[in-house]
Image (cartoon, rainbow, N blue to C red; front, top):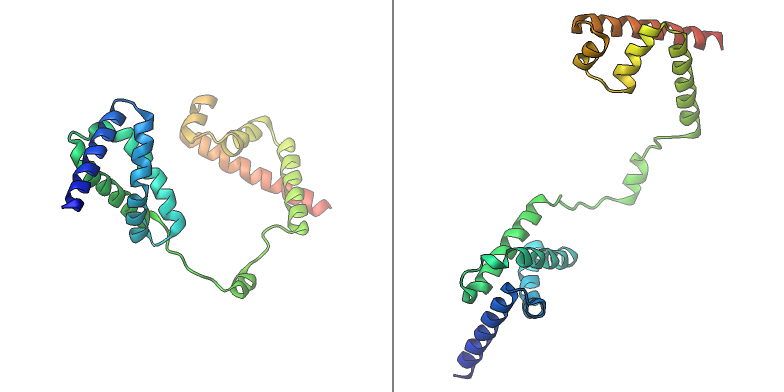
Length: 192
């Protein structure tokens, strides 16, 4: 008999808190959070099997509850509504989360390759300088065509409008300009 009375009393308090929170009472919402965070955490932990993810999901669930609380038509259904939201969000998170795999540190060290070394940085800088020098030696039309396409990222159609030429002509200009730039860069590299 005492358990039934406690359940009725608990449900009555929840209904009162939900109604107050729906009317903008932040304290009531805070009390709902305090009352139900363990409930949400237990569902999240069961689904996600990770303490940190479950704690984060609790926060996300209550943010969603705060935004959607006005959708609860019958405050007596709050607990079921909260359970549904928690389950759905936990399932979504579990599906989107990449599977955790452990890797032996020795394997990582054996397969890791340094992407940028002092030599590669120096060579990249020299290539950039060679390309700039080659661009400066090109005729204006070739240089403008290459800069518009590769530096400014213009499409062939945009270049066609800008240079007042058909797309086929722009393609030909790009081909010729690349060939001339390549020749200038090779000449510069051969001279050094």
